[in-house]
Image (cartoon, rainbow, N blue to C red):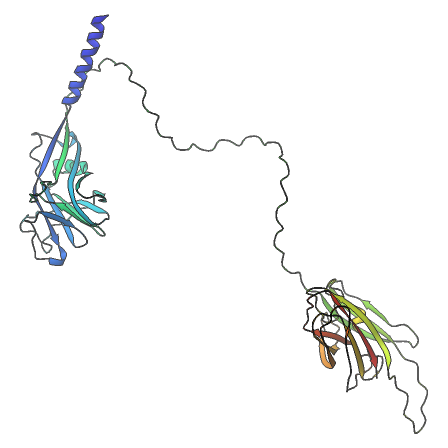
Length: 419
């Protein structure tokens, strides 16, 4: 029992020794470093203690790989890191690392004679000064061991402004270098005995969310929620139209009639007006009788907020009001009286209606008008007027009001007579 425990312990020690012998860390030091400045294309800065990387300055660094064991191959490079000391940061930004692809001299290189550069192999953004930054350059060191010329590395930027220590900096002694790990390529040994199980590690971070599973069965219907707020008012509907169709003279003694041969939203009124009785002949020197003062239309109208007085339409129903279209029974001078309960001043105008057999008609010439003041709602405001000219028999008339909207519930009454 004790012998087995001793053997397992010795096996573990051997594995540790073999693991330590399987890798070797070495450091490649700087053999040349400088920077070139495009603003001073003929100046060499190889003796300065600082290396500048900015929009005008490019830093060049070359390393000595002779510290690697003889015969080291690219496949034996387990890792290689560039360590460079940040002296100060004037402006942070992305700095790119690229291989130098042509020879250069530390004390002869200028922006005018700068070497060529390869593609970017790594990049970093310095954030804190007075410390080393470590950047992985394993692939580039392997490339040098595979035969690519070791002309060093270049640091360039389009937005940063940073200063690094050169090998000439005797104040800090923080020269750049390469940390290289070399792995052994000997034959693989036999597998050792399994060691004792170690303690359980910490819980790892949560993994990515998996794909959505299939939809489950539909649940039972929930209770009805509260009523939502009232939505916005919809757009106004299409305005109704009204037109006058044919006007026919009926037989004397018959009743006048109006017939809508259209629809509720596009009315077409056809009128039958009875012929008047033949009047008695006047004397040879007397003028024949006239229909002076004959009342032929009295009507009232109740309006509410935002209703309009126009074309004889009831703006609540959109249907025509026949009483709002008085027709002159004979050639005469129309007279009008208005009793207004509208809470604002109004101008009332009587106009002729230009009739048509189509679906539309329009206002014609203005005949008479008068104005009323604002009413308090209980006492009517009155105006009366008589036309100076004569309209023909059968002329269709209509009353309009201006302004055309009422600010509160109100009404008016109008009366026509023929003079």
